[in-house]
Length: 296
Image 1 (cartoon, helix red, strand yellow):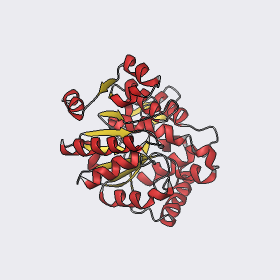
Image 2 (cartoon, helix red, strand yellow):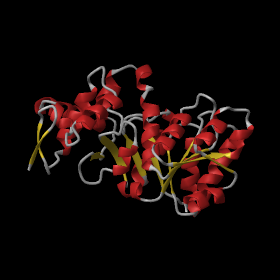
Image 3 (cartoon, rainbow, N blue to C red):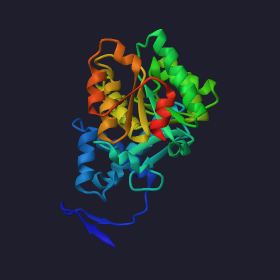
Image 4 (cartoon, rainbow, N blue to C red):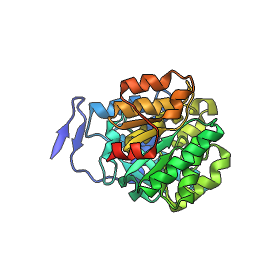
């Protein structure tokens, strides 16, 4: 059986997936200076049976794919895996995102994605009390059987990952850099440990990231927040300022129909965002038990 799309693109259904070709095509799409998660998602949304390789010359795609392999080998980020929309173990819950990603890179144990997962997130410039709250929350969620997801950034993220490891739990990092890059650099050893023993996920295109300036690469961080929210059952905000990127994940969680929890301490800091998000559907919580009851 075959399908003609509205644009005249001829797409045989039930096509086998060639992972290396799709990796190269995804990377090639991102080499367009105007490319974004939105523009790529819009192209696929208009032609739902399409894959990245349907929009890129195969020889160009394969050239990009081999360049990616060279980059990851140089960064010692092998072995690695990919998950491609329309094939195998791609998590369909990602389609709840406003601009769902077509391809994910990963290192580690992919099966953790299918467990009960909760994101514990917050500011990079966390207070001492915020660190304690993040660690306590992670420990208690691990005890309840949850996999802890965070972004491997400084502050709350790092505390959540480290407390999970100390408690003997499982953790997933959804990072805002390519799978072979670590930010901040002081978390490189932690990222390597998670890649070996847990799971690290990235949606960031490797070639685009390496070719453009670091300032332009900052926009990948808020985009990964939406993916982190879509991958998880709920997001819990430990501490965040008025302009924190954490609030992007909070709004994404509400849009995606995920539960959003805000620790009570956030409401006591004279900030405007907690009340606004509570009015939009977030839940104000004082204890981990309240979170567990809400999650069932």
